[in-house]
Image (cartoon, rainbow, N blue to C red; front, side, top):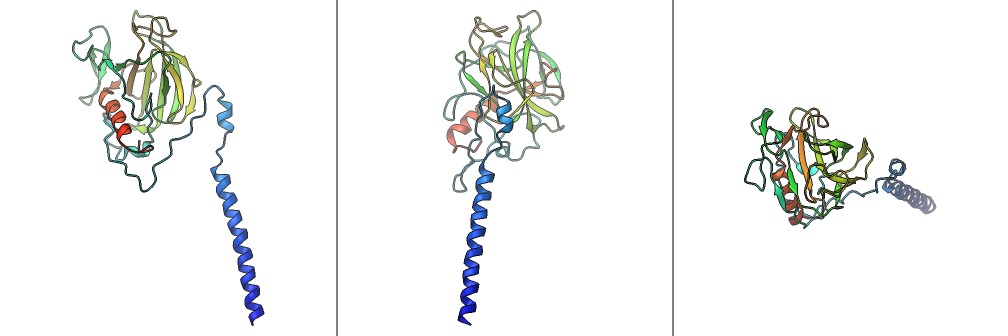
Length: 262
């Protein structure tokens, strides 16, 4: 009777050790990322996802502040990333707001589609915000999605410019159309045209200085930042929503919450 119990006990310990080793091997294997796709995109450095906060961390609720995205109940599931800088950094000095120059006088030469009323309306002004950044500042994908290069980005009668666009695969408007983010006056592309990128991936470097390639219509180093709400984000050329509050909220939230809460 005692010998039988000993045999069962030894067998149970042996099975437990084998199962534990198998589970440990499975966990290690699952933790190793599949780098085959990353190696194929050798021009874009691999940016590891920001760790999510531990259960003990506290992530305050926040609003997305993008028009026509009332379908997003919890912005944290989007795993957003700052488009430039690091948590704690300011978004930068704004030199031109949506529809105005220096936040005051309306510019009359650029068409703007203002969707604040719920429909696209042709207005006159500036369809983005311009933020002062040193030429060469790294620019990152706000969400995961498909990155595109625009080398003919310009305004009527203006010089050719470069712009990088990320069409999100996680953030959609209430009509089901993808939200896109455009970075204008870039001087250098990093991601390939049509490449899928993760949030936080390095996609381009800022420009805007008249001596920079791809500066377009610009007289100083800056980034032109748009949030595009349109079924045709690469051809709409304007179809945008005011990105000011979204950007301000994003940087303020990143500075006051644990890493990974975005």
